[in-house]
Image 1 (tube, rainbow, N blue to C red):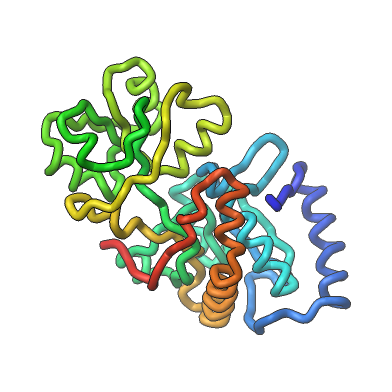
Image 2 (image 1 turned 30 degrees about the horizontal axis):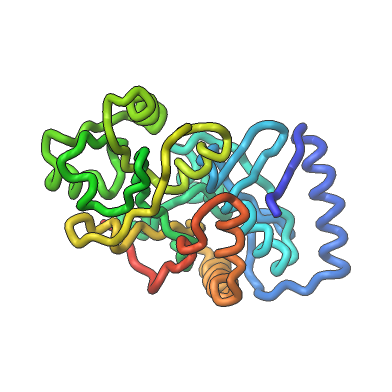
Amino acid sequence: MTLKYILPTALVSTCIAMGSAAWAADCTPAHTFETLVPGKLTVTVYDAPPFSTTGNGVTFGGVDADILEVIAEKECLEIVPVVVDPAAAIQYVIAGKADIAAGDWYRSVARSKVMGLSFPTYLDQMGIYSRDGISKIDDIVGRKVGAVSGYIWVPALQKLLGNDLKLYPNPVALAQDLDGGRIDVAVDSYGTGAYAQKRGGYPGIEIKVSEPDERVPASIEPPQANLPFSKNNEGLGKALDELLETMHSSGQIATILSDNGLDPSGADVGEPRMVQ
């Protein structure tokens, strides 16, 4: 179900313009709200597989694209993806250059001060990568463990593992040391690893969703992703909330996660919450 907006941009614009006319004649939106461009939903995207993907002739793909495809269809909108650097994705929305930001954005207290936060889309689950298929925090204690700096589970792992934890600047460096046997276990986003493994990465490694452990709070309550939108657009926020809740109830989001190679349990978001 992944959206495939094929380059070049001129062709995309032509297709969108044609589609808008069709929507106006044949479609009744589920909600009433304004967008930056009437009849279109402008979305900032960047490459954050499997949640948001770009390249290979596809302007926007992945989990968020599939979710937004359903929403756009319900609201009679054509999606206009704007490919940006990650650092610019949120700023575009704040500055009124886009309606929504896609790409596994956490619901956070800091972000809520400048953005509207939608109902949770999915969980960014903590994954344990090993050769023996472990999934318990107990089983990584006493082993050489690697993790990527900046993730929400890192402070708890530092406290638990001490000098047995090595931090890396990115998933690529982490994967190289795991493959080379310089660490025994890696802790990283489950989605990142599952996507990479489908494309030949992490040979001989089993990637499991971490079992809950009170010593690592993120294993109990993983961060909730969402679709941040303009804080001034309350109508869009209400529509997103209602449609996302319906998609959860119907099992659509669980199916989308499965279709993108992820564990469908990531759709069990619980009540909305925010990370500090």
